[in-house]
Amino acid sequence: MQMIPSDRIEPGRIVKVLRGRDAGKYAVVIRQIDDRFVEIADGDKRKFDQPKKKNKIHLQFTDYVASEVADSLRETGRVTNGKLRHALAKFAERMAGAAGGSASGGPDGGGQERRGEEGQ
Image (tube, rainbow, N blue to C red; front, side, top):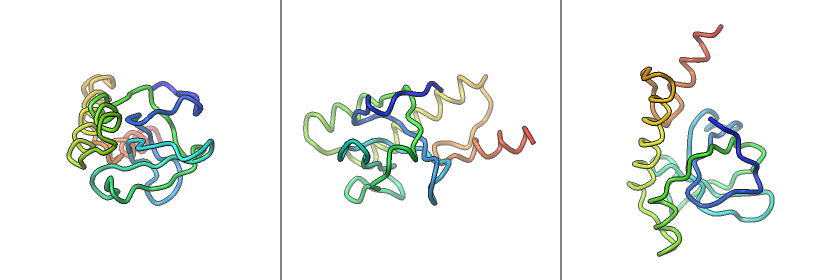
């Protein structure tokens, strides 16, 4: 996973939460509030209607932009929670394929925890 500078944030970008109760989980950027904050949602715990305001320094920005989410936000200003979940599942499959086809725990970060435990 490649790091993206935080000044190139766009709606639809997949991020990994580094701090807080959702640490280790993945979410989608819904909108940029200002230079410091963005709103993120995952379609499950954090729905589109109640996104989480998050400081950009507490996020790791991936190089993956969910085009269906970005297009929907650009065209209508909204996105369904199902589309958010689908985009995160698609990203998780991509990550599993990049890791050599190993089983990962999905967009909730379960696979990340397992990899961390193996390295200890």
